[in-house]
Amino acid sequence: MTRDREVEHLLRSEAPQVLGAIVRRFGRFDVAEDAVQEALIAASRQWPAEGVPDEPRSWLIRVAYRRMIDLLRSEQAAHRREEAAAASDPSLVDPTAPGPAVVDHDDSLHLLVLCCHPALSAASQIALTLRAVGGLTTAEVAHAYGVSEATMAVRISRAKQQLKRAGARFELPPDGDRRARIEAVMRVLYLIFNEGYTVSSGDELGRRDLTEEAIRLARMLQRMLPGEPEPEGLTALMLLTEARRAARTGASGELVPLAEQDRGRWDGDMLAEGKALIERAWRRRSIGTYQLQAAIAAVHVEAASDDATDWPQIAALYLGLEQLEPTAPVRLSRVVAVAHAYGPQRGLALLDDLDRDHGLSEDPLVSGRVRAVRAHLLGRAGDHELAGEEFRAAAAMTGNLIEQHYLEDRAVRMEVRSKHE
Image 1 (cartoon, helix red, strand yellow):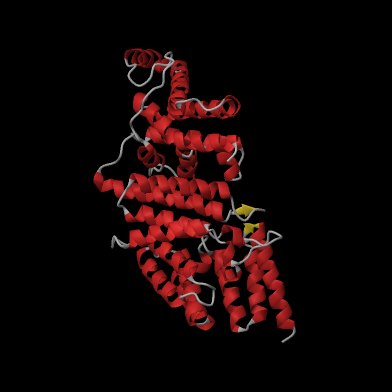
Image 2: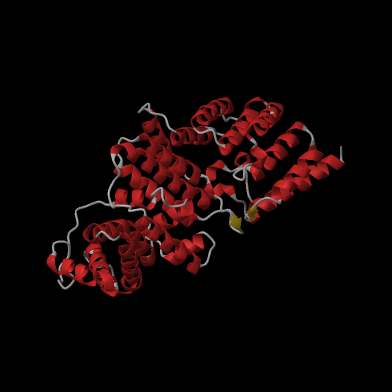
């Protein structure tokens, strides 16, 4: 690992601890988040050249603390109160003292819950989580989501103001609300992972930096909630999915579907860790959606080839998942599993039923995938002409260029086969 990479990893690990210390001391998340970001940026410039200090967390807290005082002093209305508070309580850290500060609190879970506050939109929750807990700069978050730094800065600033208006506090909610907030945290982490695994637009199939960050945060959540099966299931799901990354594209960068992937290129360490996690979570006998999805992924990776996959088991797992999470993506995935297990005609019939009853073709989450799945099933059923039309329609509905090229190539293949029939 290079020096820059080591520093980057260290800063992302320390970011929630430093922010938690400052917020706990001052109770001002909106200002503290800016102060910590400036400390992280200062460290990213200084440490690669001068070396990492002996107590990096204390170093970051001291710098963030000084910046926090500067920011608070600039707020005229709060000037006198905050200055008095700073002068009267040196217990956390003395910004003039040369020695390290000691912080015993682990505030990561508090921060995750705060960033996923229900007052925020999903987009704002993701942006704030990546910046405040992940330690990414505004420019990095903006790059990850394909918007300008100025646009992302406005989004983050508005999110912090929304938290302030909502009276969000730096504390875990009561037990009755805690589970719902933890579920929101897991949903945000999985959204980050999915955007990294297949980006919604652009000429890259995925973004490894986002999937790595999502996995790192999921592991952190898992450690903070020992004995909870769903964080284990979420981490397992991400690992079992990410393990296939290298085999998803060919030599020219083209998309390689799961059935055609070289399974020797899958990451064995990730597979082993993911399978161990889902097996442990499964034994707790409290089944949730992430555990079911991880179990499906585990069935896929345990097969020596696509033909050897236990598709009836996968179809049954999807049926259980649909009962817990009756969403369009889950329903469409069950169609695929049923088609593999019992033939394309059964899959097409199920797709028609679900489309009629639940409007899959009109659902923005899956409308493009519905056309692609129908195209695959029509092709397998022998209707190559109609399959070609569906592949072209699906290609026109995706903003991911690699996926688009794959679908257009399939359309051409279907049209060629149709002409020779």
